[in-house]
Image 1: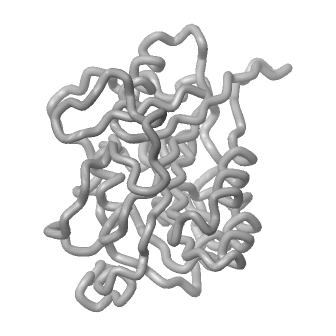
Image 2: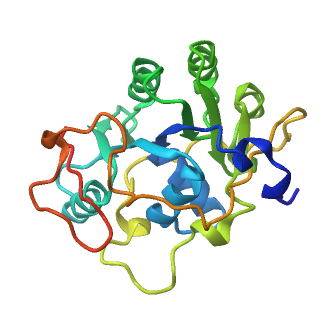
Length: 248
């Protein structure tokens, strides 16, 4: 199905208000790699923001304390408007290393509900179904963004709408110019991929297409609601971004 923003009421009339974005980094990375797409996180954030006002953008990831290149990537994320929530990778008896941040994502979504109008959860994990329902019961709009084949149908069904990143891949993929920090090499390299892609499509869904790109947006790095002087990065601004550091 192709998106038609002109026929989508929620995007056309700006009902999304203050938007909080919650990105399940490990889930998104493996889903994007499955589709051979390198995500440009600045582009992704602009698309997810749509006609709303940015409240805050969270990025959750497991980290290897000894991986200097990964630390550089996360520093870049912080300085470009993302509040990075990280947890050190744990080694299990079978030799695998992983960090599960599902609880952190669910707690942040619930604790901030009411301070934002729309939550955009970037994940395909079925474990978030209950959390999405709980946020919806608090009166917030909840949107799910992900690749359809890697997103649980039950998660799509409980959301107010589903944004299929596969259908807007050209708007969120990286340009071909090499980046300073290549997340394909350093991003969650020690973590196992999520379960195999979901084959069954959702039978009931409400798609919400990103609106027209000519809507004015403030710099992505700015915090639109509840900002304080302590939130502003000591390094100042560069280019179009107000850099934010959120050391955990």
